[in-house]
Amino acid sequence: NAGVTQTPKFQVLKTGQSMTLQCAQDMNHEYMSWYRQDPGMGLRLIHYSVGAGITDQGEVPNGYNVSRSTTEDFPLRLLSAAPSQTSVYFCASRRGASGNTIYFGEGSWLTVV
Amino acid sequence: AQSVTQPDIHITVSEGASLELRCNYSYGATPYLFWYVQSPGQGLQLLLKYFSGDTLVQGIKGFEAEFKRSQSSFNLRKPSVHWSDAAEYFCAVGGGSSNTGKLIFGQGTTLQVKP
Image 1 (cartoon, rainbow over the protein chains, first blue to last red):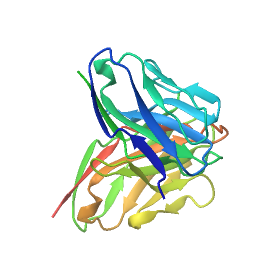
Image 2: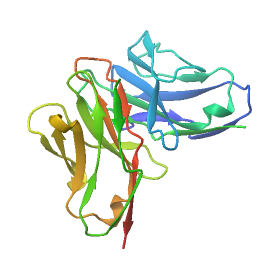
Image 3: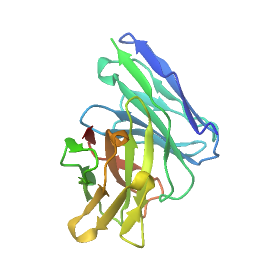
Image 4: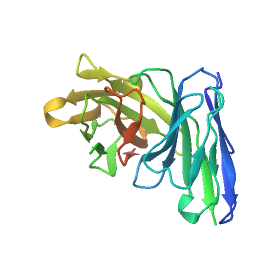
């Protein structure tokens, strides 16, 4: 079972460059989300989606765009990378109701220089 | 405001000793509560969750947690720690009446296990 797959695992960007973090899940989960993890701050929600064609902002959305054209994929775009976006990014998915388990990908380590 | 507080940033215990990691939450609706564990360089793995019923929940790897509504707490416990339990632990709250499933995470507690 692939579960939640994130690519790339590691990336170094220059300030101002753009890139897309890919996330795919093969569990037919309706709910997908992106978190960033920074030391001492736990995980913070960037954007989330409750189904194809529906996205919404989380706690820290600035500087990031998302789209959900299919159930399986939920890419996160950095339009103009900034050093403050250096972080570890986690994609997650969940089936249906809020009490169900959220499954996380293995993370993408992004450094912006 | 919704929040989760893990008061202990770093805890060190001896192998075989008991463990309790603290978690306090603030959430307007009926909370769903979770504990996740993260090993270095890895993603998050669910240890256990609570959203109704018995307030003492059992999880994987011998962990348990107790929901105390009066104290707004959901502390994680293990009677005997193993060296492989060294990791970072996150408490999270979410769910309830909302179907968005957004999780609010605590800052995390790093567990070190002494031989």
